[in-house]
Image 1 (cartoon, rainbow, N blue to C red):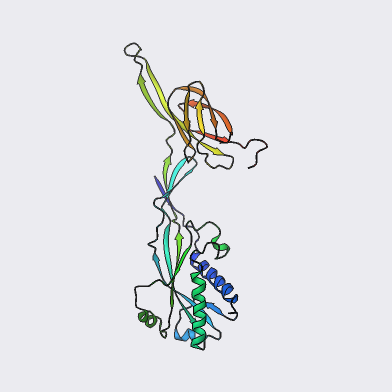
Image 2 (cartoon, helix red, strand yellow; image 1 turned 180 degrees about the vertical axis):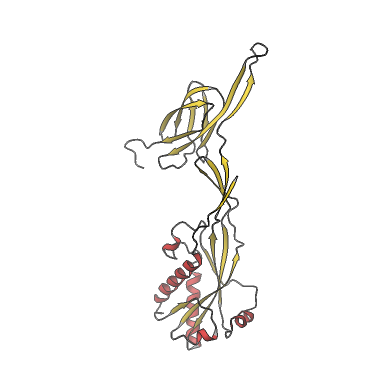
Length: 292
């Protein structure tokens, strides 16, 4: 068993900032808030003194492991015939304190009301954060909730950043983090052989070897084909592939056989199998004239 660490490139928090900025600006402009900035700076008194336009501040105040359901077990796969596993993806909550800033309190409250409406309208952010999140790197839906309650007191938060107390929206976005660990567990067991005595053979002789043999049925794109049947011609032995395309035919005597595989849509393939021997990899090709 070999463990390797290959941490993938991860810029998801910065990408989340960019996606939320674009989403808010686009939605606010639809309702006449054209001259609004979106900032992710710490909302200190010194920072607020530099503002020249109405501003929405999204301050990332915490990141925590999420209590939302995640993956129940590790990912499995195969590479060059060797089984491997990755730890399940971890879900994390990115917690923002969102405030609005303007010269007049009434303008701040109007802007804060519109921001609340925008955020509440998107409880699922899939497809809303730009191309950075459209590459399949997030295995779960990107969930968002507004109005969550953080355990610390709000006054303590403002004292910690050295700012003036203001109303703030607590906003939580749940993302997934992939592990860079891969555990290689070795090659698949392809054939299991047993020896059985023949009841009608002379004493001391007549031992027959029987093997459990199997394989994987795939289509031309390498995807597994479920519910295909595989038959060992001449023996009358048959098996059906599971959701992973795997099948197993038990108690096959030593020898060479023709195996015929057929899928439910009529695709067929035949191959020769030596027993004992390697696991079969059967590819079902698209029939001529059929669309793919």
